[in-house]
Amino acid sequence: EPEVTQTPSHQVTQMGQEVILRCVPISNHLYFYWYRQILGQKVEFLVSFYNNEISEKSEIFDDQFSVERPDGSNFTLKIRSTKLEDSAMYFCASSEATPGLETTDTQYFGPGTRLTVL
Amino acid sequence: AQKITQTQPGMFVQEKEAVTLDCTYDTSDPSYGLFWYKQPSSGEMIFLIYQGSYDQQNATEGRYSLNFQKARKSANLVISASQLGDSAMYFCAMREGWFSGGYNKLIFGAGTRLAVHP
Image 1 (spheres, each protein chain N blue to C red):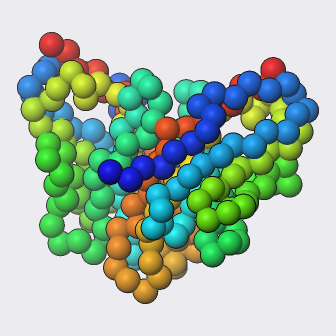
Image 2 (image 1 turned 60 degrees about the horizontal axis):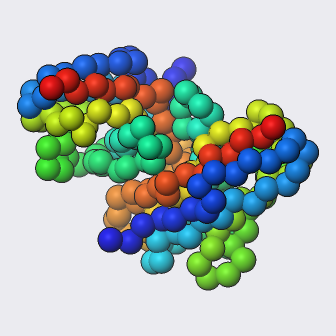
Image 3 (image 1 turned 90 degrees about the horizontal axis):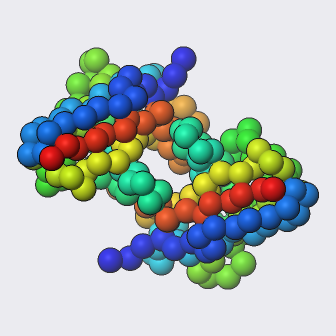
């Protein structure tokens, strides 16, 4: 069964450093997303991406963050100048939403990357 | 106002019994989708079940069913014949429609931690 994959599973970084979290969405999916979950808290939407551009972003997703689809399979989240409060689990998700057709547009999540900022 | 409310921080159930996890939502959008995800202690987010706002019947997926009461804006998850492996965090989430301008993102509740006892 196709699944979303994410690497690394755990990333430890020093405050102020840049990190890149990687995701491989399900191959026929068109929408890609990043969410984060600070330990013990609810899952929060960061950004959605469609047709090689951001379709929506939350207020959390400021200039510190960027996303990119560098090739036909990978989808990345870059966090510049990391802060202690960026420590969280970051989930990538993808959905098959096809514009104009009735779909459930269910978002399938990857296993997450646990980011620890020291 | 909270878009998604899960009022039960924790629930427990005896193995083989049924359990209902509550979820209420708030939207003025006529078109929306409701999702339930399971998050085991390992951290991944597993899609369980989906209910569309226009669906006439309650969704079912194996041992999972969704008790959808549109007028009350509730979408409770029912797990029948609970198993030890059902012990996890359960999240209710909503995707609003184009009317609300938030077509892509999922809005999550705070979650309910379910413990299944032998």
